[in-house]
Image 1 (tube, rainbow, N blue to C red):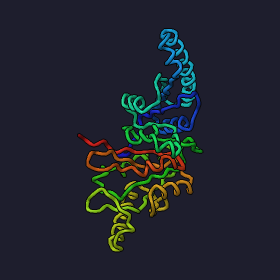
Image 2 (tube, one colour):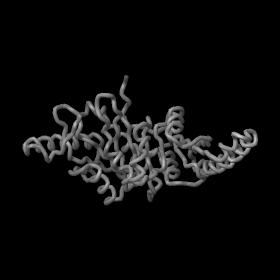
Image 3 (spheres, rainbow, N blue to C red):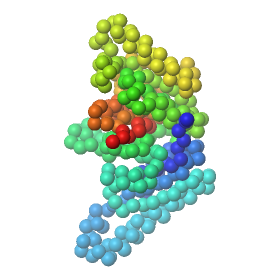
Image 4 (cartoon, one colour):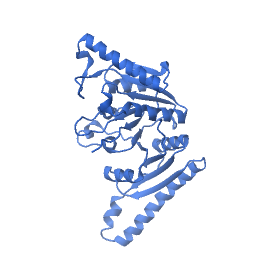
Length: 307
């Protein structure tokens, strides 16, 4: 059964400005008939600090400040309601950090969280993890990180699957990727392409993957044939035409990024697998693409492992 997005949550910036994620979230909600809820986390340290000395006066000043933001956000929502979009808004007095965002996500239970991507310089990444990176790992819902895309409604979607791991270990992640990609393509009238990068192979029923170039030629051919058969079967199951199937070789993050850039895709749909204490996290490709993506990323989450 193809996934349907019913509740979309947009994490809006604290500044009163329209961003690519705002337009993308509205376009996806409108195309799929979903409820869109927009939340903005707003926090002014100066007001918070002043409240220690004059709490009543600062409480009034804070409420007045938030009211301006609420009015602005509600005005943007009214414009979208005029075209039939079901949208609600809220401004929260809190820092836009992981704890507050996750608390809000867990209370709202969205099918999809949408947020503008925030590129972090390499030197900064060496000392701290960005909110985007942490949401990749900890957000329970599917996550859409939006770049400065040319189209609010995506016109070309690339679903990138990983056939290098045993299906039992990925808990149907490839099917979930295509479930969501097919739904988005159908709702938006977008062209859907399927990509598999054949570079890694599973050995001895473990989760460790090794470059196929290091294998014996006969074993390498057998693994590549098996992956190609699985790729074709997956494409057939979801009705992907032959002209939209792409099976390439190389380092996944490099190949996916280059392919998406060369063919001007609006969105790449990839998957991440929750760790379960026994197996490593499958998702390093997504993390590597985070600060290099040529277009927006839609990250599909696997079911959380049971205790």
